[in-house]
Image 1 (cartoon, rainbow, N blue to C red):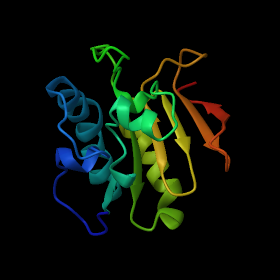
Image 2: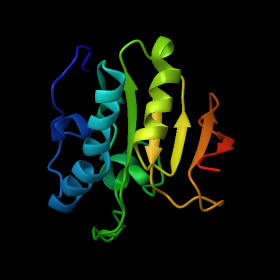
Image 3: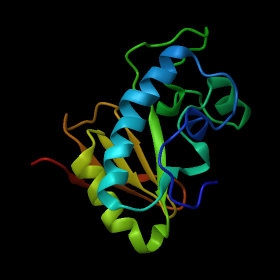
Image 4: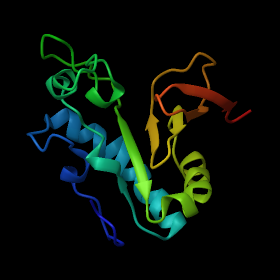
Length: 156
């Protein structure tokens, strides 16, 4: 895990399984996570990174861990190995001194990205682009069982 300030992100920072990433998934990571992440990092001025390299999670990796395989982290990977090419994925972001910096970090994510679902956990902030029930960007808190509670609808 990265702990110091870095000047750039690399794709392996976003690959929890450390296996080959399909080219279109790499493109989505760059466009929808790395590029906005660089804006956030520039704003906050301290180190941030994908928590546990948690962005791209291959479906097989998810299933091997008892998960459904339908996570936003799977970037639209289907059971037959094909992909929803419009899926924009998810990243679990964390930062230096998360507990101290969490509020500023969250505000920068809200202000400098277009993530539609932002869920605050104890050590990271989950961010994805899944369409919400309200059709707007939504902020959630997460309990100890990873259940999300809607805190507010953003951009109102």
